[in-house]
Length: 293
Ligand code: MG
Image 1 (cartoon, rainbow, N blue to C red):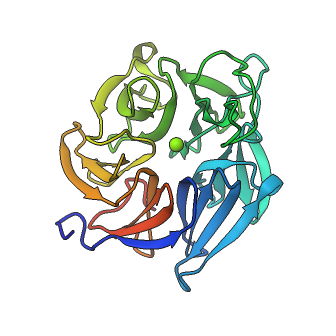
Image 2: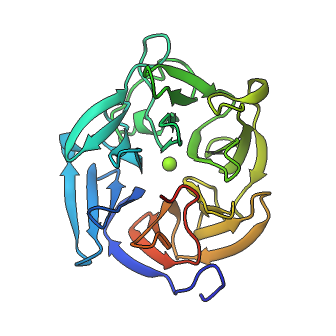
């Protein structure tokens, strides 16, 4: 596929996951870190060698899912198994948030972003505590819902922000800095919803009811990212679908399998790394992540 936005044919960089998730470009290491959730391991693909190796597994992985970079370059990741959001600083992992409001546990944090103030926003659907045990340890939904939470960068307090979703999943803040985008892989089948943020960017306007923005033609949106021009690059049932900020479809890129998540990266930030069910894919693009820095 050659397009003004996507400038190369898709490449497969690694095959061998059962359900790949949570890709993140690590600029210092020049690696893509990603999760293989059912195999309970974290993998690193090395841009210099093209080799993929196991970074953590078993009790050292605890079913991680989505991840992002913190403001100091640390990895911020979601762990189904530990039911928390955590940071990995040079291999040392510690908790960012493991107690929900009311003193109970989260369900299974799924995907996470860090905003420009350093606040951590994460989704908390129930996929990692299901009875099957495929993506974590079976358990109860202790607060009886599935929310998007915000962790305050100053005092670490945790607030439920988005409370009207079935299974909130992917997250991004739109190019205007005033819109939180959330995909819901529950009842709406993977549509992306927009929530207006207050001027200080810490909460939702009007108690926060989501406005449906986009839905992939094939399957649903799990993880997605926003580029510098406000486009939404989303996972879907058969590859990647790109929307403009108003949700109009711009492009579909078939990758031959259902995909879960994606990130921009590479040395100039224009490569798109996509985790599919079985494989890590790369597309070269003509754009970068809205938060590229
Ligand atoms: Mg997800």
